[in-house]
Structure formats: structure tokens, C-alpha cells
Picture 1 (cartoon, rainbow, N blue to C red):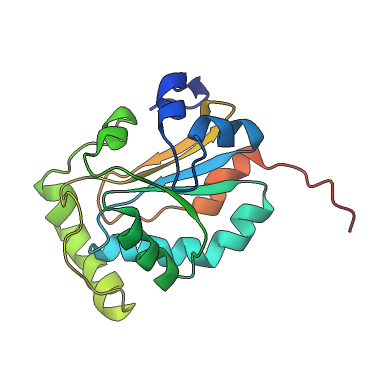
Picture 2: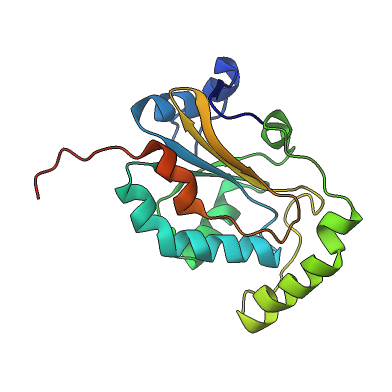
Length: 184
């Protein structure tokens, strides 16, 4: 997906968070880091949640709003977000993966999901780093991605080539840092 291009306004208005805010309205207030997750049982999804949790303060300090898209119901999602220190984060439930498709995120092929690189990284993330694996809560073939949306336009994006790709979330939002008017 190209950057600096508008997303369909209707799609962004249709995408409503667990708190009732449309993605369009959020993106008009400040840049939105929209993170499409793999299923919560995936070790790489758990690793991504841990990574984002560590960077959350810096992401929000940059002026960006963090919003997740997941494939389960909001109650289950809340348990995972809370487990990773992401309490109160806004999120969008998409069990049919409609929004994933609209943002150009595809179903992974064998190599993307189970290739040697993914196995090596899976061992590192799952066993060494302790993220483990869990039940498949969503489409196990769905690939993840992350987008920075500001004023209804995609300003930056990361589309996973492999399920095991690791995103520099803070680097993604640097394109749209907002100056804080708060005196020091």
C-alpha cells in the first residue's frame, strides 16, 4: 500500500474502536498507529504486544494514538492487552478479516508462515524470550501489518513479508511527530 494516499473515507468511518471512536475521527485529531495483529496465540503477535508495550510511552509522546485491529471479540482482546501492559488501548474487532483485506494484508503462504526464518525466529521469540504459543484465536494464515494514518491518509506503513518480521513501531510514527504545546 502506498504512503501519502487517502484511504476510503467510508472505510475509516466504518472502523470503530471499542470506545466508539471512528478511525477517521481519530486520524483527524492526531496520527494513528494502526497495528493489525496476527491471532493472539501466535508467538509473533505476543512478541509484537510486548514490543509495543515497551514503546507505548514514546509512541504516545510523539503525539500518535495507538489502535489495534484483532480477530477476536473485544473481551478476549482486553485480556491479552492487559496481560502485556496495554490497558486502556483502543482496538477494533475484525473476526472476518475484512479490514485486513481492505488494507492489503493477505493470507500467508507456507514460506511466510512456516519457513526456516520463521522457525528460527519462532524459537527465539517463543522459547528464549518466553512469549510461548497459545490457542489459535482467529485466522492462523492472516498476515499482520502496521500503518500510520493522519487526516485520512496513510503516511507510513510496514507490510510483513514473513510472519516473523519485527516492526520498528517508533520509527514508523516518526514521520508524523506532533509538537506538544505543553511547557516544560
